[in-house]
Image (cartoon, rainbow, N blue to C red; front, side):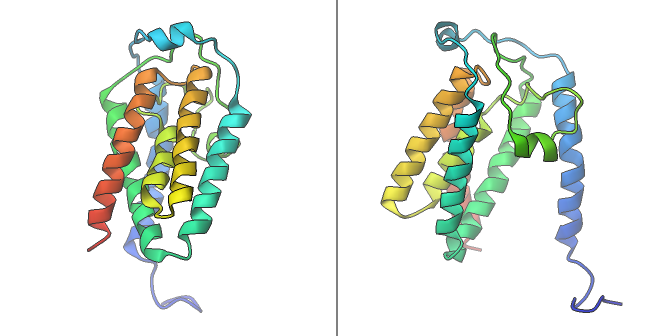
Length: 197
């Protein structure tokens, strides 16, 4: 029998979402535990490492907040962004599984108060979730989704800034950042087609 205020049992996709939420932390623990390879990176070899976590996550969360405020009154675009986000992270889980990597030399740990607490169920920091940069790709996905020109330009600049900052932190290889726009663009392109149906 349905509870008061609810028309029936919760939709099946709620169970799927709960299952995914339970599996993701275990997946990242697996990624962190397995051995990987260290890639040569001339850009990081030239670039001194610094902790710029506060600036990185300030740019990320401000970009997301501004984009969400823009998208919420536009349900079709919001749905497209959500599809794109799901596709983007599906691609990322696949590339993380296929490409076991060790962190770049000189890594300075990124400190994200939200993700560290909610998603990474590990006693040690997750440093091997490398290819591709989700921080960069998420903001670029939003840039490819919004239709306001000035906002799109601002998000593109924010995405470029975030890519630079994660390199300064040595939290990603240059290859991770360079690949981010490709996966963000592919996810946005696919989301446009999926959201039509």
